[in-house]
Image 1 (cartoon, rainbow over the protein chains, first blue to last red):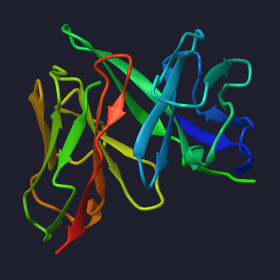
Image 2 (spheres, chains in turn yellow, orange):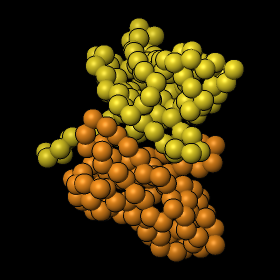
Image 3 (cartoon, rainbow over the protein chains, first blue to last red):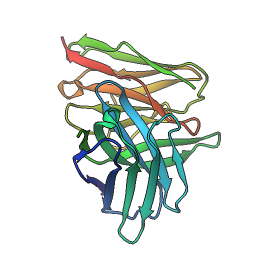
Length: 124
Length: 107
């Protein structure tokens, strides 16, 4: 059974880079899409972006901080970097496996396995 | 940008009640709508994908319907473990968004 675990600093200073890693266990990262999502009390759930195991990415254009998601297949991990963070980036960050489903009319993308989440505070 | 609006934002119901939660998109998203359940301090859990397909292991009292702009999540007989917040999510384009959530509380 696939499990995901987020790791990284719980405190980041404003204007610095937030870096998180998601380790995939019980399965291979070399298939499917892999997403980052965050949650704040004020804005609810916000999808940040995804990476396909081959390396192609798609990011939420509404994010104010520049985003980079990368994959390391040798370590079965994928990572998130959010640059020039502000207090607005304080949130619980989740990684999730994202499945692609096709039913002869359209493609659907949904998150079927989630990590437990990690709280990140942006503060000096 | 397509907006997702859930209603109600919260509701109170008793065990055994039939509960219906609605998610409305500001433009048609075909059937590209998924539902999640989240309990306090936990990650969201996938319940239904592509409007009406039940995720493996999810009880059959959960069901989904709709298409275009209007979608519904129904719990046919509310159980104690169903008290949680429910979110819809669209993935019809390159920008995926969630509804604001519906909190189901004990009456």
